[in-house]
Length: 278
Image (cartoon, rainbow, N blue to C red; front, top):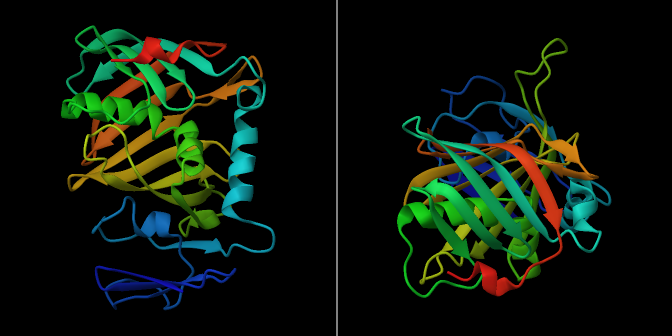
């Protein structure tokens, strides 16, 4: 049994297929012991905001973290199972928090390699997946983490490398949903693992929110130096048998840091990892 506590709230989850139950203070309207997803109670780890009331169903039967990940891999299409598609290049336009725009290109290669152009005054930023020796700037580290560890491929790679994964639940939905107003439902996972973008390899606790209907990643949330971070993925499209987001956004403390609007996608075989070496 795992017990979570925050802001006068006690959540108890019985791991073996039970429900999430909440005992709440009178300030929260609604009945006690209401089923709720942790995703909405905690918009990000450490959130102290008043939670929204939500309902869900327990994890049952054959549902498991491993089974869920297999489904999410399948949702991404051929690039996760067909050899020769390990490297993806995304082109488009990035807009920073000040409204400045620039042409941008992101080249991703599994597991966890990335090259970025256009995000940092035109300079190319590279990361070869190995733990960094010299510290990056905060901005560069955030960019690398966004386009490696926050992606679904980042989740898969972290689990393969030994990260601790838990399926919090499936089909999480806001209680405000009605027959006339449908809202997205989510399958939510928590991942605990050390990141490679800092020499001290800080341990992150991240939540991954996958759309229950499509199996595609909607957002990833976590804390960096007490700052809430959220990466959003939206408008997924099928290109050459694989699914890709058309927009990637990063938020810090509720403020959008950048949005990358993707207009072109190409996939190919893995390149020499040395090409991603800083």
